[in-house]
View 1 (tube, rainbow, N blue to C red):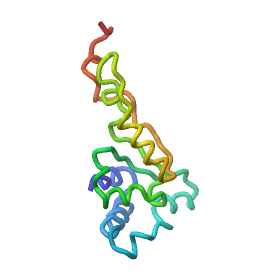
View 2: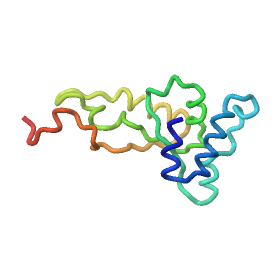
View 3: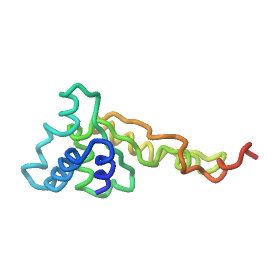
View 4: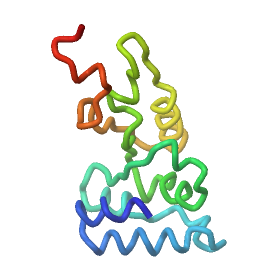
Length: 135
């Protein structure tokens, strides 16, 4: 599961274990409908603004993963992994594509989750972005 390494790095093994336990039980009838408590709701009760995770459109077909990620009480904020980075949004100097980013925003909005852009400029630069000044 892709969420665990990020959680281990940012919140510790206890939170990662909680996510793994929830993910493993997400498809059972008793847990599939229980959306009232999760990491985000517990963090908000503790006075934090949110607890979130990252996802991307390539995971939209993974139903167990999406059941967990779309649980607003588990994750109150979503960050796009790559769909909002420069190389994904602007594939050539005159061509922009926000399709994947828009899909992630729409899904977060439909689930009542906050949305956060990861980073616009990162190591994944478009090939034309490597030439300065631009030709």
